[in-house]
Image (cartoon, rainbow, N blue to C red; front, side):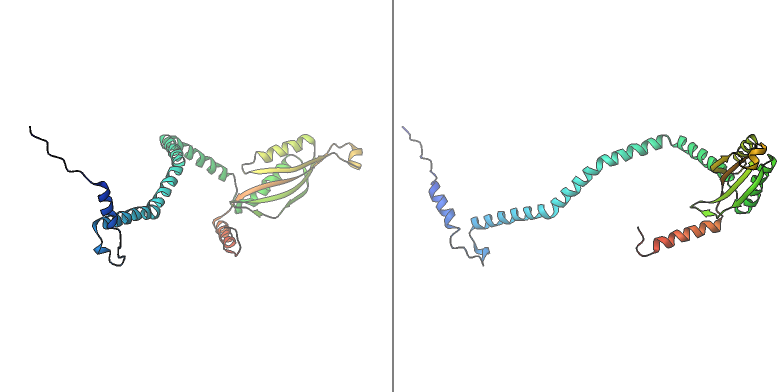
Length: 236
């Protein structure tokens, strides 16, 4: 009867001893002469160290950038939706823009230029005289220059009948140029006028009219604004 050949057995203990013996007495100054196992272990250790260092130096920055991009995503989506809505309604927005520009042009036409201010003051005076009012005071004040227009206050004091004063304020409001009345004060007659019963009232007010700035004034305004920003300590 034939017998089966005995299979060679592996001595695990001896293998471990041989592997451990390769790590004894290693010369750190001559790694090229190390046995195979220490060389392989050194290569694996260096590879792991390179991967870890590369992660912290390169991939961590990329991760931060990725997270920052994710944080910006909701705002970018909202901006996209807003611009998409504008693009869809572009024609309607253009029509609205033209309407606004026409309206602004109409308002600008109601603002007199510097050369037309004297004529406007004359119109206000004639509006009062045409209603039979007596001007006791008509004094233009100091022009206040704003960003895009100039404002001229006019101190007014007139006397006359109640209905005539009311018609005068309506005439001023209906002038082709913009004129507004402020600080109105209507007083009844006193002293001799009250005793005679003339019925004349006195109205004091400040009329404000506006004019647009000419090119030289606009340029001066811009230069003044630029100079103010250029001053040391000016807010940015």
